Image 1 (cartoon, rainbow, N blue to C red):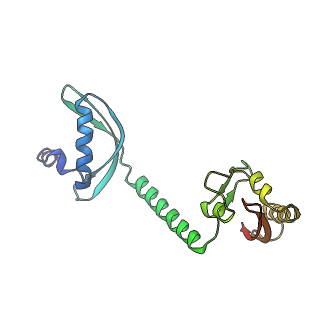
Image 2 (spheres, rainbow, N blue to C red):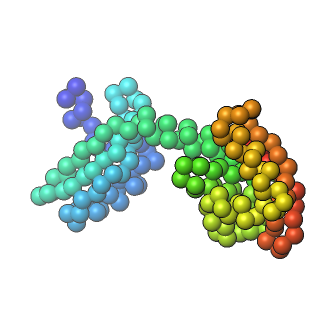
Amino acid sequence: SSEELLSKTYFEFIHPSDIAHTFEHIKVLAHNQPIEGFDLRLKTSSGAYRTFSLTASAKDGTIFVVGPDVTEQRQTSDENRQGLDRFRMVVEGAGDGLWDWNPQTNLTYYSSLWKQMLGYGESELANTHEEWEKLVHPDDLERVNEHVRKTLEGEGNETFQVTYRMRKRDGSYIFVLDRGR
């Protein structure tokens, strides 16, 4: 109710962990500088907290605040981040290097562990399929590309598994077991 709302201070609605951050925003607003897109958790009448993405400005001592409830989006984002973190832990725990190639854009992602296995640092390889082709032993490249082509064109299995040689940064070769889908 309006009476209940007006009987409380603004800070009674703010999540305790967000109060210090809110004071920093108020200091900015006191200098008539607007603030855009800051998240703030506010308590509902049921006592639960909801997250709002707020924009605020001040004029003549009055603070104006607007913004949508983004609770579900933030929860989904957090869940996705947690799932990605779990996936990374599983991959790193297995000791496998990870790659992801988009044939339409030709962009390729190589995980840090994938690069480390070949003796490269994080920023030493271009994120392209051609970079991978340069590292595959020339005697193996045609055979491996044929496995990839068949998988992409739906011939046989939707997955492939192939062993081939890749050149390390020091010029030596190692055998890799490559699996893809």
